[in-house]
Length: 401
Image 1 (cartoon, one colour):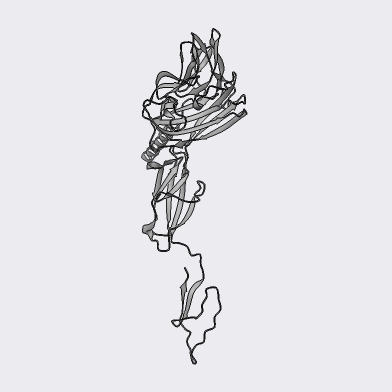
Image 2 (spheres, helix red, strand yellow):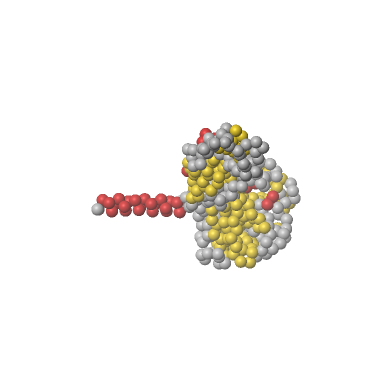
């Protein structure tokens, strides 16, 4: 009994360790509720703790905070507040965009020539998971032509750029590695060109000029351009037009975005079911049972190969198990698992021969002789039998289908 209890305890502890590993594993982001703020101050404001960084500005020996700790929170005590702000000195001022990111914000200006001003975000965090949606709770304090931007993107390799779009439309020369516009080549590329390209794997992007006076959950679908496993990922939560094509027009002093409770969502549903690489018509992620006709003469050897896609990428490995039927009429089962283990979905497909849609007979024979002038749409016939017949005749029917 003692050994049995000890074994049960070991099993329980193993499950507990597995659960803790899953809960704190590489599927979510640290400090995603923005509760942790550093002791070091910037422009008399607390700074956000790792892995997040705010796009605060240092210029002409002065510090200008554009990212703040807010006590207006969706949950917990705090949220992050990004607020556009006029910055500068000696009569040379500009409204600076505000954003928070997992990467490192940067800004560049050549001398005092504000026309050469440009800014962006380098890098992100090491990240190999592939979420399907990014959820962010937000409030927005103004509504105008300026857009807020909620951006997720992942990639592999390392990029290098040597020039970036400036305020006056020219290209300012400054070198950066894994810069946001050099990564997002599928959607919002560096208009001044990328010297060395990385491989963009996924992106989710939400932008709007709407006002949100109450806490609102925004779900940003993530689209995959490659089946590859990423190496790095970044998130940008911006109160301004950035990073929308490096736009710096229409910025409004005091325009702000409150953000809280960032969460990555992993789904076990599939968005596309392919048979021999052809999409199954009328497939829906929330419909789990299908019947597929393969043809009048089909056999189990004609059961097609199955591939499944979610968010644009093909599922493989531990994410999917396909148990093919061994004969027509049996069920082929597709088991799909969310990458973080949070859910499982099961789809079932029955492959069969072509179903008959014609119940009429093609012909009827009595004792081997076809009934003359037979029609499948006429259901009554009189047939004379030879005088003295005492046994019922043999009747055979040929189906239309």
